[in-house]
Length: 117
Image 1 (cartoon, rainbow, N blue to C red):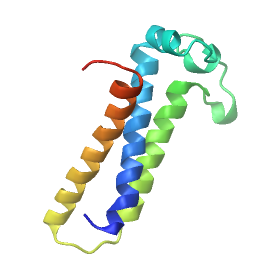
Image 2 (cartoon, rainbow, N blue to C red):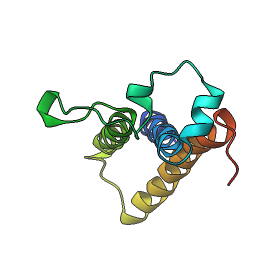
Image 3 (cartoon, rainbow, N blue to C red):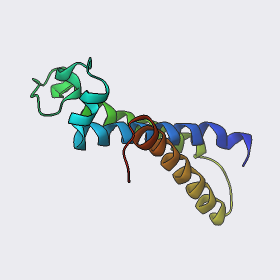
């Protein structure tokens, strides 16, 4: 691992964290509101229909967290574009970044939100 890997790995970890929160919003909303009773239901509860606003998009937790995941992955890939390496280094980088993503997911879905896999 080099210093160049720190930013992409942190971005991938953030993407995993965002995905873990999104899974909680989608599949365990009752548990989410039990754990955090003061959350704004209009934003966090996907069962509440919101009117599309800016760019004809719903601004709820599901859409914001999915967008966050995509943006963080895009930023991580952007850091690595232009690295001139042999093909096998890209596979190793992919493995490191996937592991970072899974650590971020574990931190939110399992540790913070206390779900069991």
